[in-house]
Amino acid sequence: MNEQSLKDLQQKIGYEYTFDCVQCGYCLPACPTYETMGKETHSPRGRINLVKMAAEDKMDIEELRDPIEKCLGCQACVTACPTNTQYGRILEGAKKVLNDTEKKSVAKKTTEKIVFSKLFPSSSSMDMVGHIMWGYEKTGLQKLARKTKLTNLAPLHLGKFEQVLPSSVSPKERKSRKNYYPAIGKAKFTVAMFTGCIMDSSFFTTNQNMIKLLNYAGANVYIPEEQTCCGALHAHSGEVNQAKELAKLNIEAFEKYNIEYVVNNAGGCGAQLSEYDHLLSEEPEWKAKTHTFVQKSKDISTVLWHLGGLPLLEEKEELVTYQPSCHLTHVQKVTREPKALIETIPGVIFREMKDEQKCCGSAGIYNIVNYDEAMDILDVKMSHMRPTKANTIVTTNPGCLLQMKMGIKREGLEGSVRAMHLVDFLAERLVVNS
Image (tube, rainbow, N blue to C red):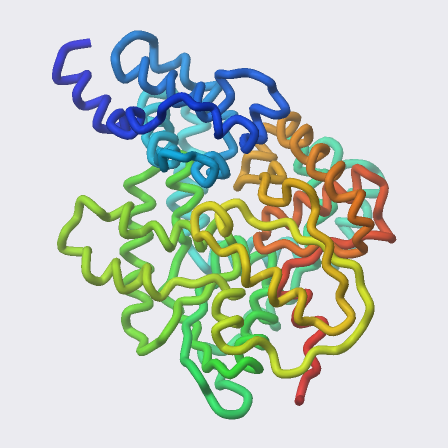
């Protein structure tokens, strides 16, 4: 590799960040893949070493692929690191370089183009996904597919995930959503809701519950039509340029509203929104408006807590534990508010599970493309959940929610344990018209 090519590689891959790692190994106990795979190459310290060697032309880039693709990107290592090494930047750079150098088949290129450029950024396309799922349920096809075990033939174990998806809402209900919902009683704040592409297609009811919680807590809620996908899946797949374009569209969509907060309810989306300033750091003309957007972007738990919680919640005894989203915990640094909200509910007994801050193995689409490795990590998580004897596992991210439902199924705990998004859990206890 000539000198200029090496310099270009070092800039792309985040070589400068690798020098912050002092190889102390504090990250090792925090890393779920090091725990389940037991390899130095599949630990944060090992991956940083490999990236450094590749950036110094001491090994082929392709040798990075398996260790990097098997990383969850949970960033628990960043929280554990005593020297504040920005592992996320190194991982992001390595993924971009691997994506740029991968020799993709025509079929893979076409699929990625459809998914990243056409499907996720389009609200009408994501609505169509919701409509198709609703039709699949209501026409009896779902029942037939499960009865005849046709779902077992789906690739990438998608049949298993199909069984833990929430029920879909009708196209009529989806279409009836308004663009503005006033606060119940005196308004304390005005906010705008970031709906999310997957949240709005597959977890529409949770989004509707979030509007209800915000209204009862005292917030006027706008839902900007011009918003699009946050770009997290693009950035995590190395499609950084597409992620930048989506970020700009979202910033422009929300800056039209006079609001205190941009509220989201998915840890992964929220983390991406909170890092738009880093994503657009090389475009100074976007600096001011990006900074404003990032400052306003908050998780629903934070906003509800700032609003003083919910006015009246039903009292009912329930044993609850919490599985935090990695990106909410380690990127957004929101740890107190979700648990505080749970603990304010009358009758709830809260029990923290061991190593709650560790990833459950969902990690975007990690559990789809690395199914076996994700299930090993999930099994560890469930071994920590069982001793709490909780009836309900509360989560703050759609991926975590489906993964915990998978864990409940794998452990044979259906009927005795349920998993719920924090928003749905609070909405279930909300005494309406209080």
